Image (cartoon, rainbow, N blue to C red; front, top):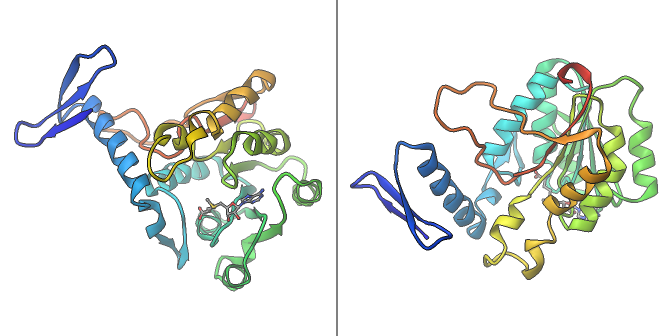
Length: 259
Ligand SMILES: C[S@@+](CC[C@H](N)C(=O)[O-])C[C@H]1O[C@@H](n2cnc3c(N)ncnc32)[C@H](O)[C@@H]1O
């Protein structure tokens, strides 16, 4: 249980041993506890279903978009592959960053791209940088089509944001992992599911049926990947952890400039 006492400027957090810890509000521990509660509350009220990017709905926590922006700026990828397009907001976000970088393109994969979404994406100012592939992300025809769009030596970043069940993410990690270039990332989104299991908008099996369990299993057999936080590009504050719906999600492929 969390108690916030703004008048006293302190946060009290129940501990697993039955005791409680009291943190001043100007501590990273208080920030982490309040953020965790905020993430859970945000999940319940569908906070992330309230944003657009350059006119397209984007179903993401803004914090995660700022962090992935830091990664894209540093990496300057030639290709960003995203599974899970929905309304196209995240595709447009990544394409916009690449446009500013003056290089790169985005490949968006979705099992169903609704005609109005396709029309809006294909007529968007960022459309020249976006290719849509319709089909299940784990279908042979889909992965073959995506693979054919990548040239040898290109820097490739992969973001998995489609179906977040353990088995589906496991399938995606196995298929898209080999496309990730050394030093780049394979990002398995929405590990927050494990954290919000039991909440109103969750399923009873989310405690284990989530992207993090897929990531953990993948790492056992794929030693060329390591679970690694991308790190803050700038930090003059005392917070060291991301506020995120993507915990334990960044898998860096060993090698490249960051080896
Ligand atoms: C969370 S939404 C994607 C949100 C989007 N990335 C954004 O930021 O706005 C998930 C999408 O995954 C798609 N999806 C579900 N199962 C899929 C599958 N097997 N293969 C590809 N896409 C799938 C759904 O159709 C849906 O559009």
